[in-house]
Image (cartoon, rainbow, N blue to C red):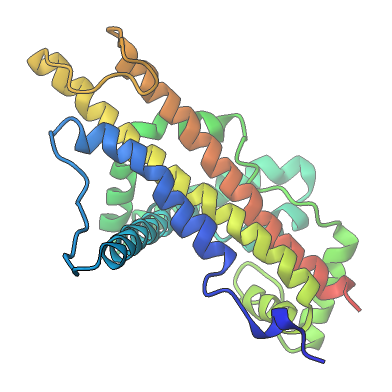
Length: 297
């Protein structure tokens, strides 16, 4: 018998509610603090004059909710273009980083990682990709200290994995048996593996979806903190040029001379934290698919 929950499905999925709507709503205080209040503006008032007070309020509320949802979409798109693409350009796909960690002896891993990242950056700034890579680098300037510090102390953990070598050997063998190709840095093996799991293992797919939602949240939050860092940098420059402080401290009504630098340092920390968390859960998503591919019966 078909259960009611199989018939009546919510119009929105968890990703829509948590990532798009949630992060859009979270960005509103920052938007008010750095844009609306300093420039003497206000949020748009959604009034349609339908004639019925109840209908007018309902339509206005729905319009506001849709605007927040759309803002969340824009933030998520910016996260995919600025954060995700930049990480991919510099470090390679997550599946490639897992492969490097598994096939490289531990004593040679630091050297292999430096060589791999160096080649990736060289290619990123080669002819045909130089412009977009330069733009992405410029966009990350206000949080460059946090990014550099995280990379130097290996907070990213980008080239780490929980997959044992024995399990990985089974993955390589099964990919060949299933006709997905040889597992290497130069073959497109992961997508076929991922869709195999999605189509044949609902329990693993549910766990993967949870990791996808969490990584999406942190990716969008990183854009909110990046935009806030840019705003702080702008207002710091404005203060030292004109002597006029347009914004207060983020969490205080009595800013000090150094509050802008404190806020900027805080956003560097938050950006580094969110992209580290994004990488962690994005890697968990891939590892879950790889485990399920050979361990699910």
